[in-house]
Length: 73
Image 1 (tube, one colour):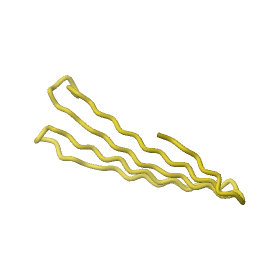
Image 2 (tube, rainbow, N blue to C red):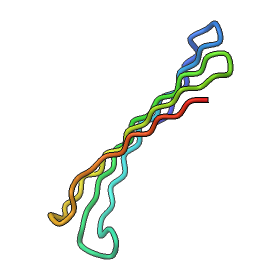
Image 3 (cartoon, rainbow, N blue to C red):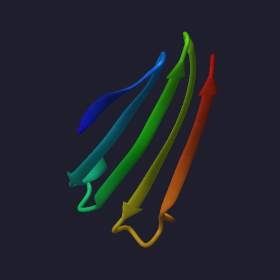
């Protein structure tokens, strides 16, 4: 799901939600689930974005983990 909201006065907000499920990931019987949440604010041509992705795996040998990203420009 992706949406952009115009807040007026040169300010915009974009939001993203994404879910992915993988069966037999990597050719094995593993299952993985990914959830990504992201947002971007824009003001007069400047942008600030942040995103978080979490991974849940059914394989006991692998830890569940997450990743956070931040960018500005």
